[in-house]
Amino acid sequence: MNEHIKIFKDKIKVFCRHNHIRSFGLFGSALREDFGDGSEFEQEYSPGFSELIEMQEELAGIFNRKVDLVERQAVEKSENYIRKRHILESVESIYVAG
Image (cartoon, rainbow, N blue to C red; front, side, top):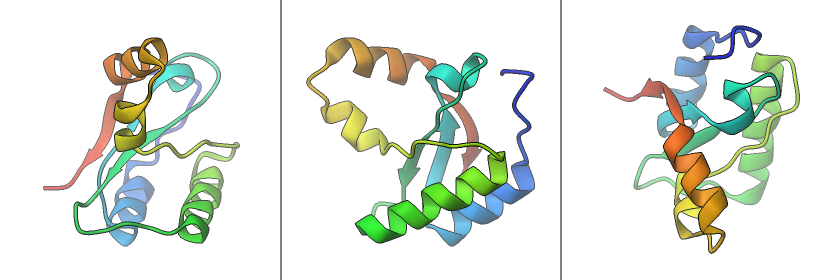
């Protein structure tokens, strides 16, 4: 994990539970010196666009920097196989519902 990014696991856990996220991970630039994120929602939960924007803003507050919220399912359906493979192979879990 990138030593330049503070991971507030307690805040991430609260964020994930509040937003029905069953797993949350970082990928790509988060593992380097620039930043990104990846998550997976509970099966029965499907947030709307405004909810996704609110979550993205909340995460930006937690990490104190801009973030891009990307759903794993969207990555898996991507036609860009290079980007899809890179993201899925590099994701590191931060939270998994138990």
